[in-house]
Image 1 (cartoon, rainbow, N blue to C red):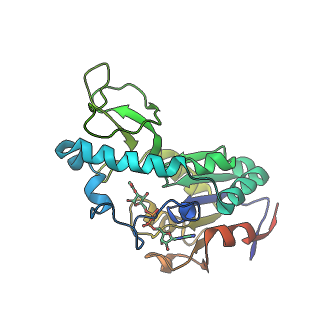
Image 2: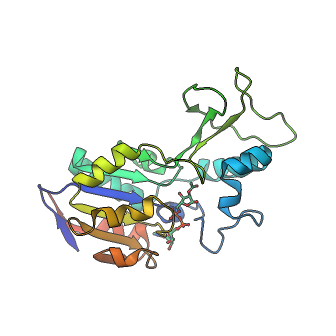
Length: 235
Ligand code: OAD
């Protein structure tokens, strides 16, 4: 148990484990495969170029699962912390669902994109809300410019969103918390090393992540059980 003082600035990184208790499967757990594909094989520019239908089937499945999910106590605990800390808290998620927003969080940075948004792969039209599911044999969705509509997701080999803003917040934080992330996907896996030595670094999840040695505290347990009780005092 620890406390947050008025001088603290808190950076929170969430991963798939935070949505696990809402029924959204993690990527690298026992059910981490989709139709025998690893995530890296369906979430890449290469996959999009080779078989866009396979990619849309994968994201349509994920849209259906996420549309049925509700936030769990972990999401609500982080919203409560934001209500106490205001802009002294930065919430950065690798998750593409909208469960943090559904729980009430206002300042969410989606570094890997958002499941319920799409964009054109050919023009600079801004990403737009899109809750549709696309399945063959329909036509692939097209933009007015003729380009193909793709999920607004950062795929393997692409640069995550908002990195400037994220590193500014990392540079300012005095408390770093990672929850429900296996610590293998870069650049998020190295955020803890970036702040180590000058910030308290806390991990929350049922097992140690791959980068556990960089954390000063690992609280082993489900995010929905640990996060609501992580801080005894918040001021
Ligand atoms: P992973 O699937 O790699 O890891 C999920 C982590 O959540 C594991 O370490 C589990 O131990 C932990 N976990 C499981 N249940 C939990 C619970 N109830 N509470 C807390 N933790 C729990 O997911 P990420 O680390 O988020 O990227 O994966 C990072 C990125 O890899 C994803 O954003 C995605 C994926 O490929 C893209 O799609 C670009």
